[in-house]
Image (cartoon, helix red, strand yellow):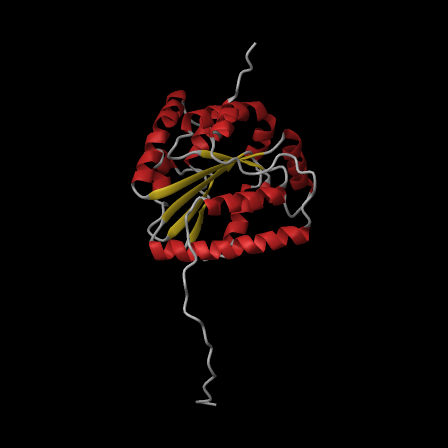
Length: 267
């Protein structure tokens, strides 16, 4: 009997690059991790200058399992760059007014202008995940979303926006370990929401939603990239490195800075 291939497996085979490793034989030491992250931060600064100079418009979508480490990657990307160039958008639940608008309208308002990179910590793909599983949208709304998203994203790309989409995946065991850590650590308890608990209890519902989403919205103009995130350090380094590889930036020459001498006037 021929083995049935899930939607996620199809995407992994079709994606140009599948970021993240499988199980790592050797744990990355803190010193090694910091050294690699330092190099990537330096490259992100080069990218920032290039994006601003050339007027690029970039949207990066971060989706995936709850507790898979999306926020950690976003934090590492943005901690050394300018918030005037790299902007994070993590939208709350829609207001009553926003619920009456075209679904993607509140996301479009936050798209980049020339010289900006917008990182969406969750995105319009909420409809394909939590809204489908928790029945926050109708079946017709969900079906229309899967049909129209590739068209919407093609319009984005043809309008001059580079769109990069990441899905963060972790094992059941690792998700449970991270959720339990949030319960036990008073510094992390704020990270555990009622929706997180629901995602834990509905693992298989979310798995089916993920597979259907990937199968319907993985396109040549806006492919999905899978980030294996059981190992946080490897996932962060791999995702940032892959993000940098998607943009053909160059190091721009800069004038040499000379502080000169302090003026003694007014001493």
